[in-house]
Length: 178
Image (cartoon, rainbow, N blue to C red):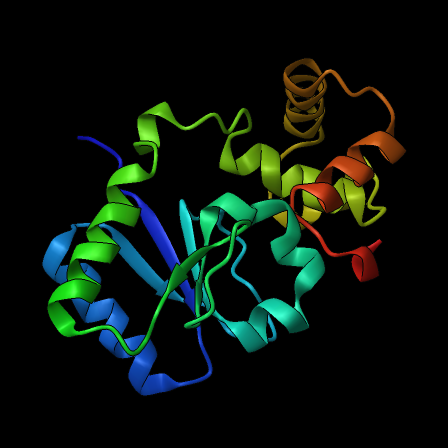
């Protein structure tokens, strides 16, 4: 079975968020999750759709995701994808289709880390030791060590501080979490 794309919507306007969810459902079989403006989800979606307020409020979170974030705004941007809320329904559907078709398929994504490795990385960046990570994720210490070895091999980063910087720069944790 092929893995489906995941799209996260972070929008304070519930009606707009639900409308986007339905439009995406018309043109794609992607999984769509609603992300709280205060707590982004732990998963790493293929595309973020966010209102401008969320992007400004969480600029450190969205900065490394520029090419995988679509901002709901009528102002064009060279850094981010934009979705103009004043577009006609047909044009909006076409534009969403263009954005979704430009995303890499989940199988072809360059994400080097598995979801569990990302979970371990987040806890490492937050200063947890191996035992704490094992307890929080309900896995053995040996499994934590295996994940750490795989993370280090995949990223080529050996120090905890380096992994923390990587986690912040790639949006896995915020600066305030470290």
